[in-house]
Length: 185
Image (cartoon, rainbow, N blue to C red; front, side):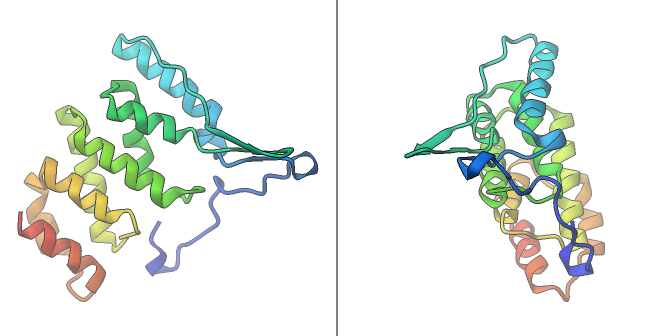
């Protein structure tokens, strides 16, 4: 999503929690990024990878009679750090998502940081490379882009450098900060 071009719209993943008497707040998304959908997708990917899927649970916090359920992506990030191939696939899909999420800045930053340390296949590196370069070319440099550029530095810009160099918006100071960082590599 490129806010600079005025295309911002409310995210379906941030919603009114409308819980019974306000006693339960669920910070997980809806649709493809609900806790249930993430868990199901992770299990499918684990089966395809030939591994036994880990048990995924949202972190719960309670105080008095109130309960908060935090995003399941925290559990996915922990699994990425342990080099779980199914979690790596979910993590790549997450950084490819443009919508906003509760705690999205920190979740996406942590996902990119975990992916930087994970063993990635050539195809996974290519997906990440294309995503980050396209974000930079679109002028879409959100808070988490600092971690995205470190991830891109690790896997390399490779064949996309010519496109990046030719098409980067040199009038955008935010874009140029990240471009100069990548150029030093």
